[in-house]
Image (tube, rainbow, N blue to C red):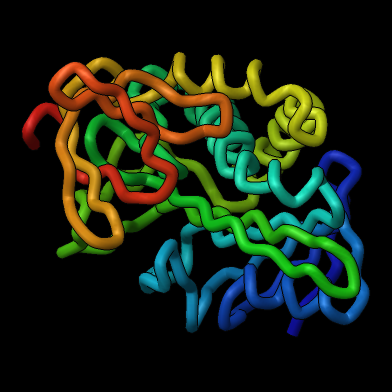
Length: 251
């Protein structure tokens, strides 16, 4: 069962009690001709997923949301939406729960931390037909978090911030519209990049990055012009375009 809810910052919103995946639903709608912008949320997911096909555990009480955008930018710039969404998520949570605002940090490429534990993740997926569409998937641990995860997890309630998924979505949607305007279909990525770096976890620190074929260590020196992680190793700086940061300062 689903229902169309009140507009969120001028964007339509469809609410489900349960879905397999909000991203999958958004992409299916895009293939059927839906152009958006459209928010899709579910109170629970039976097949939620994160990056690289990982499972996203989806009990009630947390936020599971996808923003469907059609032709938000040229396809080459669309991966930058992970930085745009991360900033919007940071803004939205800081607005709803100002007591945790100073603790929020962005982990490359698309996670939000409270301290050194993950409170939210972002998954960007796309469809090319009948037109180029992007699903910006966002999951936030509002009331609970999984245990025994590869990277430590936390939820807002555990950080003494009581925020409902509904209230957070209202704040997030407004913040997303502001950050999309700043990004300006990719033309404003320099400003997005600068704002992201102000909130970055581990900037200037030693960290470990898990690549598809190996793990590397180095010092996090910033982002390149496309959002790649700049990693310094033995005086040489290289850009990492795909990987997973899993350690800061040797942790």
